[in-house]
Image (cartoon, rainbow, N blue to C red):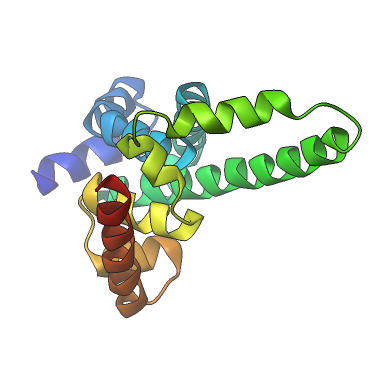
Length: 176
């Protein structure tokens, strides 16, 4: 498989659009799941995946190790997810400034709706920290090892393992 992958990556690097489409078909489901688990919004997850694919397509020639295509594209996706999460923080801060002058009843109603009837896994994932969500989804959804996650995120492998363990324990407690 890795020889076929390397050959397909090489063709994509040479400008073969069909080869890039083949590569995309290998990873798009995992990319979307990873984005959705981290962002919690379908439209934003789709947008981030689209941005990532476009960026990957335009930068495919920069990939040095063809067999690392999935990890390389996941690193781009992770950066784009983090960018979107920073937008959420900016937007939330902006909304909080506006809410100081307005009615927050709609936000309170949304909070109540999210907790009525128990938590879904997606809601529980959103209660994890950004970093916990990221390493857990890279591990469970994308199947990366702690060493690979360390390489993608820049976090030490031992720290990655600890964060995954703590995140799983938090999820277990929330889902009980």
